[in-house]
Amino acid sequence: MYGASMLYVLAAVLAWKPGGGSPRPVRHASGFLVLASVQVLLGIAHVPSVHLPLGVLMFGLSVLALARR
Image 1 (cartoon, rainbow, N blue to C red):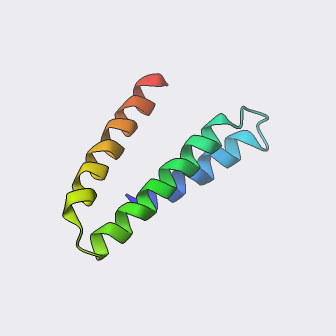
Image 2 (cartoon, rainbow, N blue to C red):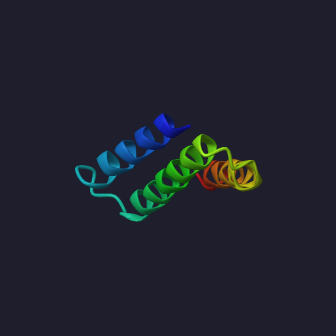
Image 3 (cartoon, one colour):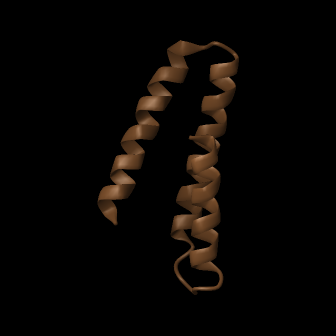
């Protein structure tokens, strides 16, 4: 998921800068990368009480972003 988040940021930047699109997807992708980073840190720290709900939230946000396209 972390790697996919980094690819999402890269794709958003490439669509925005050279393509002249909106910077909005870059902000969304960056926010998702921050959430993925927190998710990784919580997983390493063995904090399942926050790690699992954050994973569900990220899944929901992914579905929402997919449905908006």
